[in-house]
Length: 143
Image 1 (cartoon, helix red, strand yellow):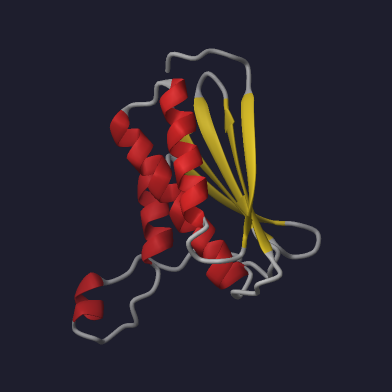
Image 2: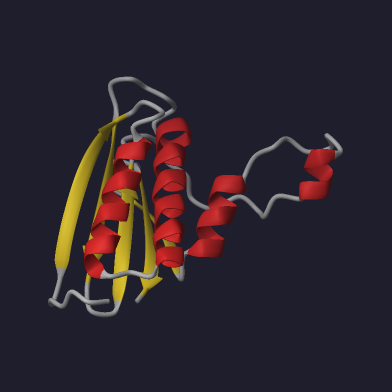
């Protein structure tokens, strides 16, 4: 990482509409490039941000048009912490890893890929709830 500081943070509030996750992805990419993150980790970061935002829109906020999704990225000298918060009921745990063979053979529905990708690409993932029950998913990428 070429930029150095104790802590830097950006925050984006997105309308709860699919497609707006691309704004968070582009912001994450620009931010990571400014910080000198390796290209392969930039792609990981973009995927993590997009999947978490989409999950918040679809599952947390139940696609309510009046809701929002908040994405923040905080950088220290050691890590990038990405936090995605919804305004919905959220969820308390990730789904088990998808069984691709069962999905291809139409024995299981095609769900769980987003959380699977997040867990594979992030160095650490935590789920928390706000006092009113919304989900906060915190994902860390080590630098």
